[in-house]
Length: 109
Length: 118
Image (cartoon, rainbow over all chains, first blue to last red; front, side, top):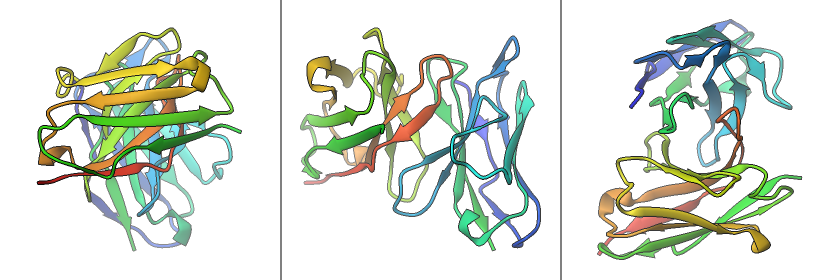
């Protein structure tokens, strides 16, 4: 199984830039396709797709969210952080048929 | 618009078989995959399995021996069945549209909470 490692928590300041990392135990890229996706989840809500295939902004997601990376190292950037962004963020890989999620990074003020 | 809605019993006894239904609208299960994701209370997301547009399935190896996913395309419904339930199967179960050639979940249901307890 591909293991995705995320930091459990990250302290942020409103109006500043923050980056959330996701490291895979093996490459999740095939050719030029990076099969790594990012979700936001707020308490009591279902997850919401933010970024798909590492760097593509999902429909309706503000442009302050962006994603980058390839191979085993990926980053979700929020710039600037707003109060509504306080949530838990998960990465997910679909490189293997056995999809896996990271354990999540909780943003805290 | 695309919508998914989970339904099923909220309380189960250990060793019972869980049956959940995901009713979709705004797309057909024959055009995209539908997957199930579990979230234990206060914990992270765990992919359980997916039935793809063509009807093939993939399962998480951790639950593969207990899990089956199938569908009724005429009713736009996808079903999860998991036997030999244990307390550690407690959690919120989400279904989501699992995009065919990207592998990401672009739409999610609200989730259904399942508690396994005697």
